[in-house]
Every structure is written in structure tokens, then in C-alpha cells.
Length: 454
Image (cartoon, rainbow, N blue to C red):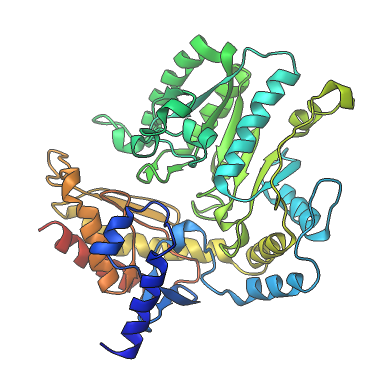
């Protein structure tokens, strides 16, 4: 054993003595699946304590837009840290928070004028749910206390966010603690009937939603959706026309629309925000992950003056929004976000992404004919496919065989980080990747498909 490899082992052993990792069966790390200690990031690459490099094909859970250790973001963090680390936003303000709010109002869909800060995506969803419920309470409609969510949705793992999620893997154990949403069918274009295109699926699912709202609108606060791509639910995609129709239905039935763009915002779908492709403005827009370029935790909820005004009044009326996070609008995190947004202003990020997304699509196309690959799909900079036992009959592998995990392990051995969702393989690389790295990523992915399906 070399000194460098013993350093990897030493760090992993120290970690297992104390750290409880997210979304992980810890017994496997101790027994058969060693942790990988990362000591440095370099653009699209991660480097472990042994010096091995890994191409980060998923932007470390979809957050590192411009790669690791981006110099502009790092410089902004260092500069702000020398001036002000933190001050509470209750009764105080600071330049980074107000500048970021002004910037977000300018770049998001028109009509979103008020910004509330939190620390992560699930917290942003909690704020949007509570604001919507509280709005109806303040406007004299206390019967409205339910939410509509889509089948296959995922919005986070705090109790409110988990309540409007529809993935049994996450909900099952905590069911007794959760409220039950009204679940509408997903407009996932993989559910197309013979002869249907994505817009046909959208129309059919909008008709289903209309029938649901006709029965329940009087008790509904809001409908929540991940625009264009249901990410953690398996990268399921739908047509922009569904969002257009959804906005019309919410207006017709006087129901709030919450757009959860935590994963799909900031250029992931080909436009800065997914809602742009349907030319709609939600009543609440939830942002996080790429907001700071993945450098620091920060989230924001944007809403309208109409919602904001419903919370104004005398102190005795007790209608203020009494929700807070200690680090809401942290100055250093806001400085990182401003630096990340400045890159969008100064560089042709979206244009370059479209070119690279086209190259990714071209390189993935041979997988369309693979006998164990189904549902090859792409929306902007997000691409995915499913590992299946039999393509013709759409038969999945038995879950216990964990084919996706086999794919993941082999890709890691070859220096590529692609972490499937079950047996769904997806690509969400940072924007600093180049065509050569894309070629490497796809070559290893194709090789890993072969290993995982034999």
C-alpha cells in the first residue's frame, strides 16, 4: 500500500467514525463500498487524496454550474468574508442581500417582485407552501388548506416538502407525519400512448387536471410543479405547453402556482428559467442549488406584490409571515450568488450550453438502439435514459439487482461521477465542461451500460 492510498484509507476511516452521510445506507460504506475522500476541485473535475481525478458528470447534485473552485466565485466569497460574515435580516439589511434581490427580480419572469431567503431548496419549498396557505388565511378563505402535486414529484425532504412529493422511497417511513396532497397525473412524455407526441400527452393530462380542480379547487391553496423536468423522480420530462395550460387552469380556478426551479433553474433546460419556455409567471418561484454556482447554501422564494400585500397590516392583526432562518440572506452566500449571476451577464453561457447540449445529444444517440436502454431523452443540458431488462416489453430489472449501482461503481473506477437514480442514468455536467470531456463522459457511460447489463 502506497502512502497516498493510505491517506485515502485514513480519511475514510476517520469519516466513518463520526459522519452520517445523506441518502446512504452507511453499512455499505463500511463493508463493501469505500468512501472517496475529495481534497480539491478543478473545474469539471474532482481530485481525491490519492490524486485520482473524477469527471463530475452531475455537478455534485446539480449545483456546481461553473465547476469547482471557480475563481470569480471564490474571489467574491473571500472579498465579502473580509467585510461582513453575517447579520440577521430581521430589522437589518446589507448590500449583498438587497443587490441579489434586485438582480433576481430583473432576470426572473415578470411580476415576481418580492424575495424571501432561506438556506436550501427544501426550505424554499416550505416557505412557498406556508406563504400560499397563509395568504388564503389572511384573505378570509381558511378552507383552502390542501395542495395539488404531480405523480412522481420530488420537492425535498423536510416534512412539508416531502408531503408534496410522490416518491415512496422517501415518503413511506414518514407517512404518519405528512399531510396528503391531491395527486394529479404527470405529463411525462414517456407515458405517451401510440401516436401521441409530448404536446398530446400535455393536453390529456391538462384535461385530467381540470377534472380534479373542478372537484377540489375550493379547498386548494396551490399546485406545485417542477417545470419541464421531474428530476429526482427519474428525470421525467414534459412539454412546455403543459405549463402554459397549467397557468391558465390555476388562473381559472384561482389557485396559486408554485414553480420549483431548484434543480432546473439557471440554464439547465436551455433557458435561464424553465418557465420562460412557456412564457408564464408563477405565483411563487423557488430557487437554490445553482443560485450560488454551487459554492454555498442559499435559496430564494420570489412572489408577487399581490401575495406580499396580503401580509401587511397592524401588529395586532397577527398576519405577518412569521417564518425565519438564522442564516437567511447570508452576505457571503449572496456575494457568491452575485458572482455566479455575473458570469451569465458577462459570458455567452446559454449559447455555449446549447452547442454542448447538441454535442451531448449526438454522442448519446447510439444508445437509442441498445437492447437494455430505454427512454433516451433530453431537455436542454439534462439528458437521461433507463436501464431495462427487455426494451421491447419495457421490462425493468428486479430492483434487488441494483443495476444502476453497478453502473455507478464501474464509472467511478474509470474516473467518472454519474450517480443514477435507481436504474435511471442521467447527465447534468457543469457548464465549464468541453467537448473532449463530454466524449470521455459518454464513452465511459456506454462502457458502464455494458458492464451493468450483462
